[in-house]
Length: 151
Image (tube, rainbow, N blue to C red; front, side, top):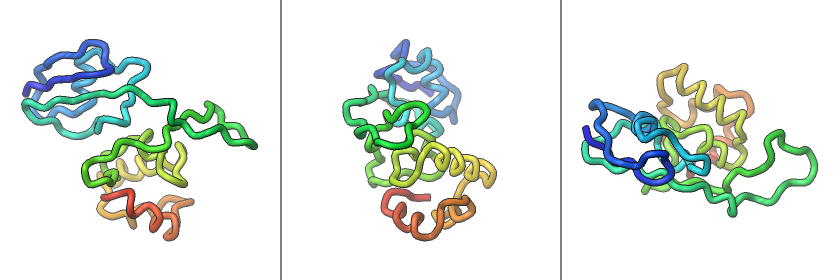
């Protein structure tokens, strides 16, 4: 298949990839992301189609929330407030990255990593209710996430 990669990558252009290739493979063919690339703007694990264009946008750090007083985060607080969502407005549990999940209310990097680990161990999640297997994600928190997530 032919895929065009644009935006914040080292070598934008048109690349020939094997049928069934994923977004991360196209970005790798383009030399990888630049330092200011927002990989959360691209579904890295989604299979690509012939003739598709993949655009990697620039991180918008101007929208970072103000730093919290109290316990300091180890790597600073530069998370974006929101993440680009698909047309339906919901993130897919089965394709979202740690960066994307980390932007959800009540989900930090640790819970985001646990969600991805659960997804990989089960070869995908069929329902948001599958998240109750993660300690710290009870029914109330899952219900608050329902408008933002889809299986």
